[in-house]
Length: 313
Ligand SMILES: Cc1ncc(COP(=O)(O)O)c(C=O)c1O
Image 1 (cartoon, protein in one colour):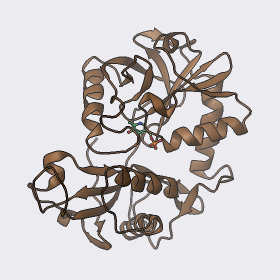
Image 2: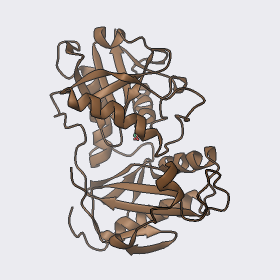
Image 3: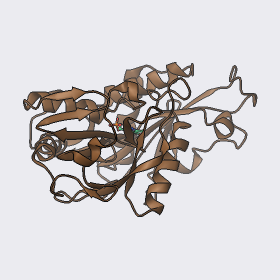
């Protein structure tokens, strides 16, 4: 899907023109992948635009930077305000928001000491990611690529470099005619998709791999766990063998981009009866109700964006 540019990008505290948000080819990030980032959504509610779980996404961004010892001269609230200001200035929503922190131009050794940190926030219009319709799931495969090994590239950091592994998973899946790949961890247990967490339903219980199986601590994953508990659905976080994917009653992906996407088949084996299952539907109804304002924001997950005029999305 082509990128839809907006007018401004927030850079180190100032809104600059989209086309001026450039970095030098000899920047540390270009050579070594030294970036951390977020993917956040802003929804359109009857009350106006609102960012979903802005504080939690920004905390994860700061945590990712901390793991890599990237100094960030902004507080969590300043970065949340930067998201709000960018959407407000651009007048584009609903939208995807991309906060991005990179090691910039200075030294070119691997040691980043003295290399400046550059902070950006962009927003742009973006629709569905995996393309699953409300009543039809997507067809996926188990990847031949393994997710990041523990103590190599840290899975809990949302770092640009991790997405080289994600690219291998995604490209292989698409070339083989699937929408997405599910990667196993180094021990062969189910980990996650290239850009999504995964959930299974078996005998009425909701299962998802724990953080120790090389998964990103997804904000949507956390939202689903919260909503499921509220709905009285039993939830278990434990290691999941690959074959459980084939005999589950329901399987779905979660993520900011994928939201809650039902999975119809894994490796051409139909999941359950091939339809969107009742647990997936119940969770989706709760979350999508918060996204469109038809259900109350009882967890305080939305940050309203004050806007003057919508330019178009
Ligand atoms: C590898 C990976 N896992 C899981 C997720 C889902 O995380 P979230 O729900 O915070 O978007 C993402 C998306 O950010 C991801 O890239």
